[in-house]
Image 1 (cartoon, rainbow, N blue to C red):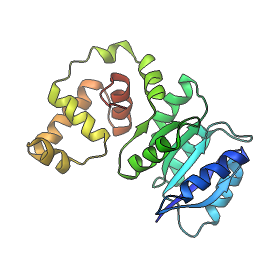
Image 2 (cartoon, rainbow, N blue to C red):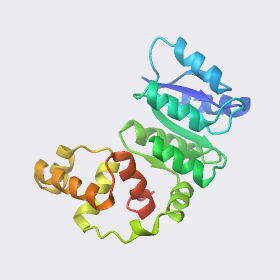
Image 3 (cartoon, rainbow, N blue to C red):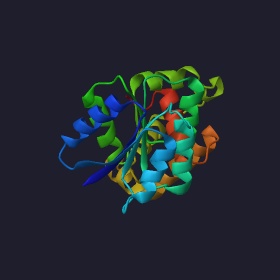
Image 4 (cartoon, one colour):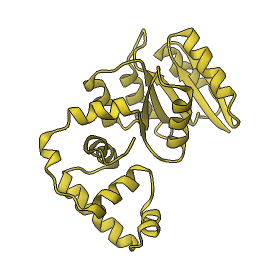
Length: 210
């Protein structure tokens, strides 16, 4: 059973989303909240941490960025999927820096929301096309001139899908040590040191196809 907690200040949106998720076998909305404060109160009262938090960005008492940052620090195992009708460039980039697993527009069809949840449950990342385009638009020009081989781009894509070195080794037919060597070289070329930054780069460069 996948336990989900939802925070949004619009009653009808919470009700509709809860109904949609409740119709999917194996999904269970264990709590709802209308504010950030209420969200953390309900989260603390649960006997078991939920698997996923669905978070709106704009709330009456605190922003979704604040909630996501606190979740990362205090509840790092909870997957975070942001939901919002619109968001600024700075908001999106702040959330990718925090390391949220995905972002879906509140105007997206039901199938896209379910696809996003399924993707992050499998260890991947999900950013709606308009969000990915926005991130690419503010891409640092120097990043675009980094020369990457076809093999390196393949490894970046597989890493961003949540695959481990062994999985990548099996899929493209090279040793685990070679995979790790490629990944080290990629990090050096891009001047990064973690997978969150790698996902952000891959979205900007268009390596992740959304």
